Length: 153
Image (cartoon, rainbow, N blue to C red; front, side, top):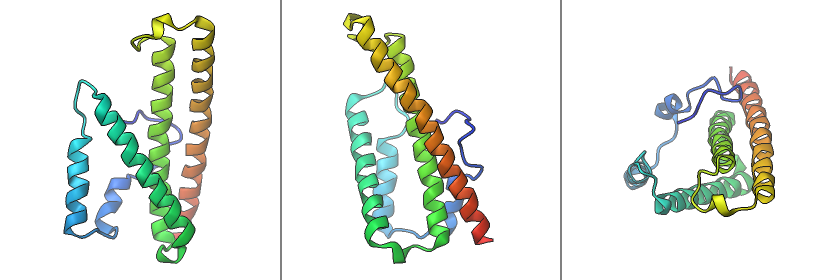
């Protein structure tokens, strides 16, 4: 779950779904199954983490190819919805990176206690900087979304 952040959109992406184009029955069933598979189940499961990363990479690859080769299929409303969704995805990535940095700094992961402090400090610094830059990326996506929404009106 996302923590509030200055870079988050002011739009609830999920409330836009009723007006969004829909997949067929089979596609909707796949999404429902994925949602169930990747729902909040604890304790965390490394296999689910791998699966979630795999699905996210497949989705990112699809979006990249679609925006490269099928631009005429999407109007400004769809582009605005996509940018809002990308902002939320970036916000999730931002906060995930920041949690990893915090956990590494606290030596919370098994085996981290054996990592030399200098190396762990460098890893933590890199992740912290990535988290800050990731916030900026999310903020730019937020701004683009707000501008696109003004064009729709």
